[in-house]
Image 1: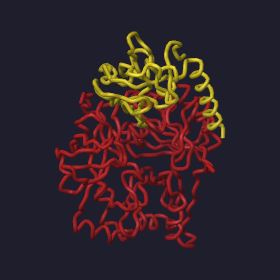
Image 2: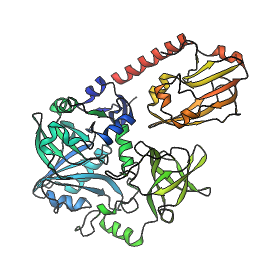
Image 3: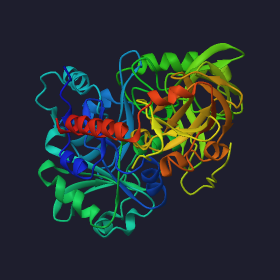
Length: 367
Length: 137
């Protein structure tokens, strides 16, 4: 039997828009409405709106909330200013990554965690295990009661209903009203563009969505979400990292604060850092003809040396790009590698993982 | 709609029979709409002998990789270089500028076994119904 897919509060809207729907981490989500390329380009050149309600939203409150998060996360919560947010990792004791997430500080003892859609039970169980029965640590998963949209693109601050939140700095957040809907708006995103992620009550989902659609914003699906993040060099949990990868080999060492008291995974990570990593997640650009996809082998002189974790076409750059794990000695920029595409080795080159940079020269190029 | 003069396979390739046992081959509109934006094509080179139902290339959209099968047996005469350079033509104009290859047929009677446009239209209606039922769940 087919497993019952979870639906976001905007599910009906997507169907009315005749979106192509697909299963993602147990959710039924739109992959595209009109075209992934069109949606991708709308976000790079104007603005687009995504239903990202599949992301988990968990409030952590209580007198010991700060100490609790300092114990669990790789970056210190106590240094985070109220009204700001930061990216960090949830690591296991052995340093493996359980998830990457955004933590928003809402008040002295109030935090909001926004994490990936997958493994919710396991992650909540992990939090609960470390919280124990302490009454000063309150964990509330409000994902089902809320809606979350991402409005992304260079033109977001020209939108009427976002005027009130455009003073926010990057990673800043505030409570606000959008079309009379009470929301938490944060200047964050997963596309490499300026933008906001906005959380409101599920009951107001439609009103919130419509207030953007009225302004002609393009609805964008999972396909563009993936191509935009890939192009901007952003990693996707489960594909580019998981429990078997550590932050250093994944290029996420900057999210680990070793002066952070004694967080879970710290001693293992100290050991890994001391020894140095043996493999690394690289970015590559195809120099031969072909598109690398997740799971394809990376070879060199006929020998398998690693695997592609994410790959695809980069619409803004008009090249084929990807991420993959290779031994550290092959991780230097400029190294020639090959990707096995349908039993044929196709040439590629190791390049900086941030393929697309906002505001930089990102000339389309022909391979 | 699907052109009357073309013949179709259950895998959504089309062939447009030309004079002297030749034919142009492409992907049907339904295939391109299912795949979404096509960004890469890998097609058998001119001179290649192909067999009906066997692979003659691959098509990749942003999200998916799919095989293209020969609607009939024969030899590849020509590959549409324009569509290799601009794969999005398959989306924009699947029955025109988005054609893929030209074949020389070695077994002309194979054409008769393919679907005509009426039969193919019925298949598409059926598939579209199944699809909308699935998303209703």
